[in-house]
Amino acid sequence: MQLSTNVLPKIHKNAGDFMPLLGTDYIELYVSNAKQAAFYYQSAMGFEALAFGGLETGWKDKESYVVRQDKITLVLTSPLHSGTEIGKHIDKHGDGVKVIAFWVADATAAYEAAMQRGAISYLAPTKLSNEHGEVVESGIYTYGEVVHKFIERKNFTGLFLPGFLEWNSTFESPSIGLKYVDHMVGNVELGKMNHWVAFYENVLGFTQILSFDDKDISTEYTALMSKVMSNGNGRIKFPINEPAKGIKKSQIEEYLDFYEGAGVQHIAVATDDIITTVRALKSRGMQFLMVPHTYYEELGDRIGEIDEDITVLGELGILADCDDEGYLLQIFTKPVQSRPTMFFEIIQRKGAQSFGKGNFKALFEAIEREQELRGTL
Image (cartoon, rainbow, N blue to C red):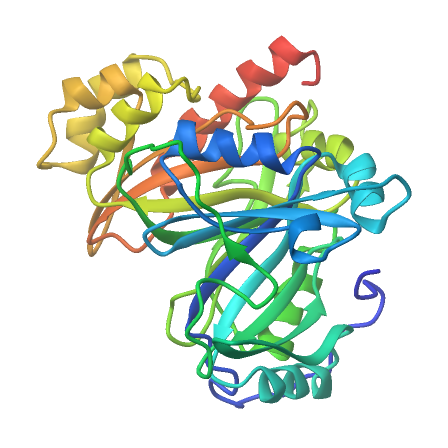
């Protein structure tokens, strides 16, 4: 189920930040093999084992492994039988994000506010409890089959959520320095970007903070458009992309074809030391998009003086861009599953609050080279 894209949500102007979101609580991915996916995130990206739910906890239809690194919590969930809704989701989309959960002070109030403004219900307010207290959760649909949950934890002292047990993994993988979710990008169908911009404005009280058109994000062959939405305190940022007309198939069209609909394109995770983080990821087998070395010949003139050695950035393939408040460093992984869909961005902000507009052309040309190898350009 998803929110109808034919009817815009109710418009509530000048409502202020009527739904304070305290941060990203967790991200849940539906995957074909949760146990193996959890090991991947441990071994490749430095996440630690946190919690487990499955047959041993009384679940009969699914299992979930929870991993955490600093403020980033991932839930990897798989079905235990054929014919389940989780299995159907994986069969259609492949591995991908199902739930983006927000940490809130009052999950009931957040749900009721969203419903009053035109949201479609995914989960009415529900209490989960155990010996550590209770959690209240609720949820609504957004683009594609992605949902937002509201998680209220003020009366809970447990590890993750009631229904989960501590996962005592014998595998130890040192942190690679990932800190928190910087932003998450959604890809939507042609002509639907403004619809979902209105959804986040009117249903969740977000504000559009940036906009990029096909002149900003284009190459010789492909183009896309994007608008960046942010909640009131700036802790949640959602760029929303749609394809634009081009000579060849854009990365957004490729995603929509292989994901078979709208969904989360990438998760951007922050670090305070991108050079150390990327070196660790490369040593563990993570593959990244790489730009031509000529990119670095002009980098110093374009962004000015920075703390990092540009030669080192070039060796690792790290991109840099600047705005009026400072600069940022970023790099993008290749897709982390068989389908050319979801990937990760590693980002370090040195004051800049933008999203790397100066890197768009080089980045998308790198993506096009990958598309050409896949025969999907």
